[in-house]
Image (tube, rainbow, N blue to C red; front, side):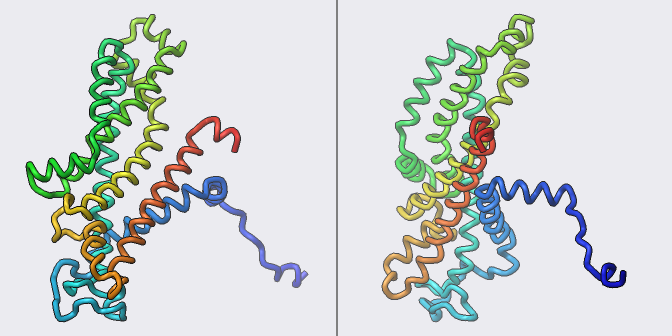
Length: 292
C-alpha cells in the first residue's frame, strides 16, 4: 500500500489548458506567427528599458564589431545597431498596423455602399480602378516632394493604393450576400437600409477582412522599407530598417553586421505576419475548416 501511495498522481488538465493545446496543435501557423510578432512588438514597446540610445552619434566608436558592450556592433556614425534595430521595429509596426486599419475602415464603408447600391457602384468602382493604377512608391515620392518626409506621409501614401483592393473584396462579398434569402426577407419586411448593412451584410465581411488586413500589414512594412531605402520615406534621423539598410550598403564588405540585423528583423516580421494571415485564412474559411 505504501508503494502504491508513493506513486505520483497526475493532475487532470484544466479545460482551458486543454483547449489551448488543442488550438496550438490544430493552428501551428497562427501560433508561430503570433508568437514571433508578439515578441517583436514586446521588444519594440519596451525598447527604452533596455535598448539604450539609438540616435546619438559617437564617431570614435564607428564600425565596431559586435561585443559585450554593443551586441550588434555600431554603424558608420557610431550608433548602436541593436538599439536602432529595436526602435526601427516601432516604425515598421506602426506603419503596418496604421495602413491596415485605415485601408480596412475606409474600404469597408465604400465597399458596402458600392456593393449594395447599384447606382453608386459604377462610379465608385471606376474611381477605384484609377487609384489602383497609382504605385505606392511613386505616390509617396510625390507627397514627400509636396510636403515633407514624415511617418504620417508614408502611411497616407501607402494607404491610398490599398483602399481599392479592400473595396473590391467587400463589394464581392456584398454582391453575394445581398441575394441571400434572409437579406431579401429583411428588405421585403421594410427593414431600414442601415440595419440591413450592419446586421445582415457586415458580419459576412469580417472574416475575409481580417485575413486581408494581415496581408496589407506585411505589404505596408515592405513598402515602407523600400521607401526609406530610396530616401522617400521617413527622415534619416528616425531609425527604420529601410534607411539602416540604405546607409549600411556602402560598408557591407567592411562591417556586414550593420546590414544583417535590420534585414533579418524585416524578414522575420513579414514572415510572422504572413504566417498569421495564412493561419487565419485556413481557420476562418468554412470550407478549409471543414476539410481540416
